[in-house]
Image 1: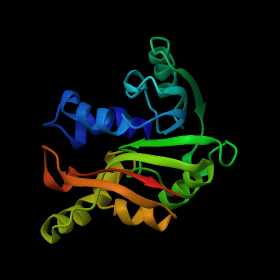
Image 2: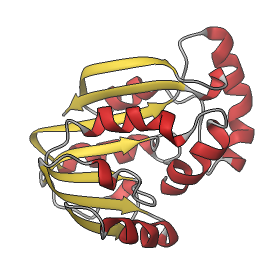
Image 3: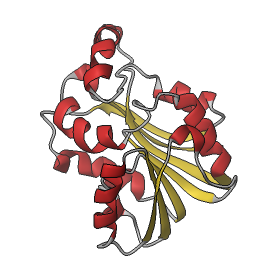
Length: 203
């Protein structure tokens, strides 16, 4: 999750995109965050400086000790409190209905049990809480889908388990979420790798 988000995504998926070009996606998604936030796949903490003042507490989940160490360094320079936990998204070690906002940024593509993880995200959200997400996944174009299906078996091996062809909207809705806002479209880069889903969903 975090390794893909913070290392392989900028270097492999979006060779022609800079982190500056990804920044508007991060700003757009995080602008709606407030209260107690759970970020899935926090990685090295690229999102931490971008959380608005309405966020008072960020719980960052990631399976990589190395990336969490980097996130701890980043957290020292942030205004919000950060609690970083080494754990899997398929088994979130938090109480049910304890989180105001769940955030995922380019994470669902590489979680082995994405459906199970989304179920866990729904479990920990308070009534009225939101899932804020920006992900890449299945294109609506048949010709691009064919390339995504062809490339994914190879891409998973070199891309930290990343699937190019995950149907993000279907995954989220199948986990019991209702999508209230969704924007889709291609970012700059090879089309099989850069069809973006940006939105908000509620349990």
